[in-house]
Length: 116
Image (tube, rainbow, N blue to C red):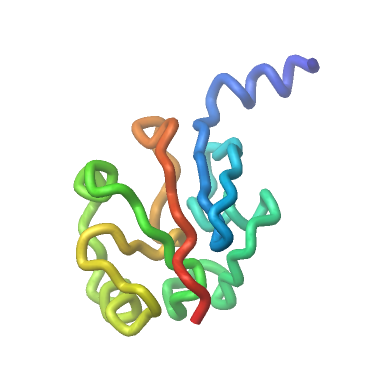
């Protein structure tokens, strides 16, 4: 393993993702990435058609309650999109493009929401 890989592993966090078929995927989430970018960069089926500008809901995910409660509140724009999204959950739904990297999120499980 190169020193760059060791360095990246030391500063990244791990995410477990449950896809729409129920399969789990373990991936690395790097500093500077949104959760959506980590999902997309690991070839998970996240459309993210707006590219991370919070103007669609195609990166909708579900977070566990205890994780959801630790994040900053959703913006008004994010909430407007989510309430119209398939499977919206008052506590748990987030646009993954609006969840920034944090070492506090190491080891969390995120579930991809149903496609629109």
